[in-house]
Image (cartoon, rainbow, N blue to C red; front, side, top):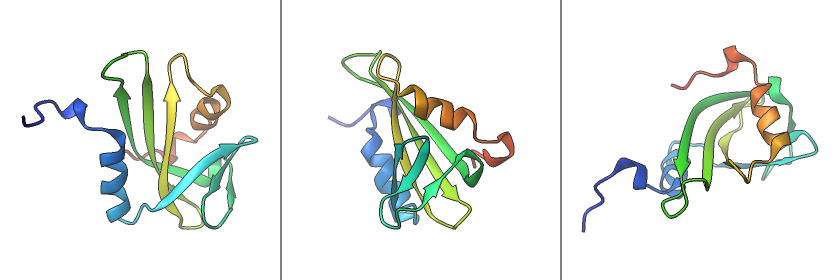
Length: 108
């Protein structure tokens, strides 16, 4: 059966799409900083730009939610960060993204 609903697309489909566009760095959050997977560069909120943001609700459990952030850094690294939210929110990571300056969010 064909997929009928856009929201049924899984986060990994979007991650693959962005990887093909050059957003191939995986970021992780640790000790208040984003860390780039390959370079191990550390970034604070003012050193990243949010290019796009996609929100997902779990198909079986609507409270199982996540946000995919598509990011560019001031050092030219491009990649993604997947964050759970709702009951599973990493509050420190959520605060990090709230602290990204508004002019650094383009959602293009």
